[in-house]
Length: 81
Image (cartoon, rainbow, N blue to C red; front, side):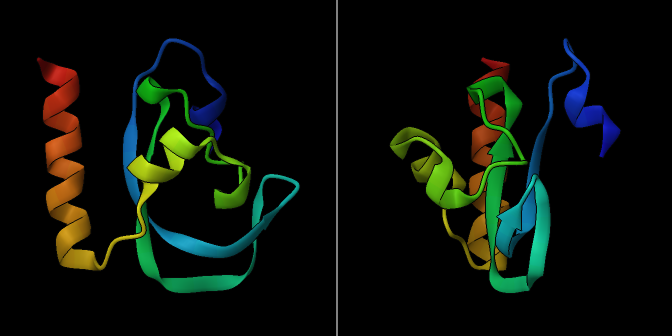
């Protein structure tokens, strides 16, 4: 995950939501839902969902896999306009 610390590189990921994040790392396994993490929106993958702003929480989801993929694709299109 070193790419997350590199400035100037835009990325958006759909990831399985960790049960919780401690010191920037997943702890306690993963849930059955997915979330969108987008650096272009100012999100930080080291933040737990509860630590993200309400706007980033709205973008993150949660999503089931199929709806998450659709939301991910739609979110990517918003940044390409």
